[in-house]
Length: 347
Image (tube, rainbow, N blue to C red):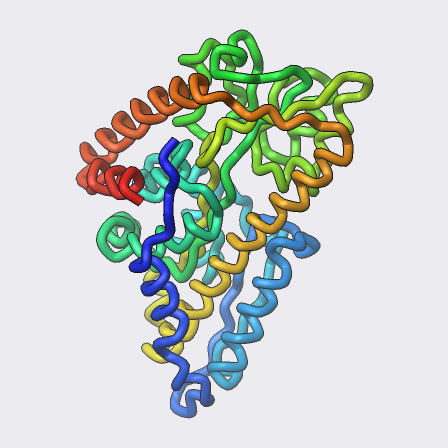
């Protein structure tokens, strides 16, 4: 599977976006104060999200001299994750985290970043997304009437099961928790039964055998839900197909244009700069959690099953077909799907 590299352009874009407006650190004396509601689907206790979220809120308030204040509503206190996009567009939440997989028809370009094999790490994916936004993502956002202030992306998914999975063929007849529509198609083609299931429900489903395979980041599986505990007297296995894994998830931080326009240009620049930093830090945290989760899996006798070259080649053929299919679908909607997927291949 082709190794995806972070381009110098991606790094340059991100670095520039984080440094270009440092002179706005002084209070903005002429602006009126405004309070923004920030809605997030994850718990405030989440180690991955809590620190970056607090740093974002504090930085925005400090750099605007208290003229922009942020009220934080974690754990779906204000908006359910499935209603995130509508909440952002209507201003129910002023800053809303939007899980793109819940809005596949509205966010087809953003969802291309969920494709299996597209990225090797969460940080790489977020940096590339920011770099690609002006040309590829912005037309989608403009059509929806929203402004993206940041994005975070998960690390590649792995599969956990109580039997060894050495290739796609081994998934035949198994019930597999699917992270999205594209992966569901791949699983169906392999003879598996994809199951739409919230991440928080995987532990119970594995324990009760209502699914045979859990799909998520190895950090989430090993360090959050402790999925290895479901094995009981059985063995536990992680299927590792190589770089890029089985897809991932994408979360946008969006503001409706009406809310965005209430900010002064200087405030907009500060909110967006700090939003970019927030997304990158959360993405980095997913990568860090993978190291912790893998170690915990190994400590609890979970075996990592590395796919051989033949199995990886077979998977790559399926992934290539999925990329072409999804890109063509996005093209038909008037966006540059094929061109963007070609960028994935050449990184």
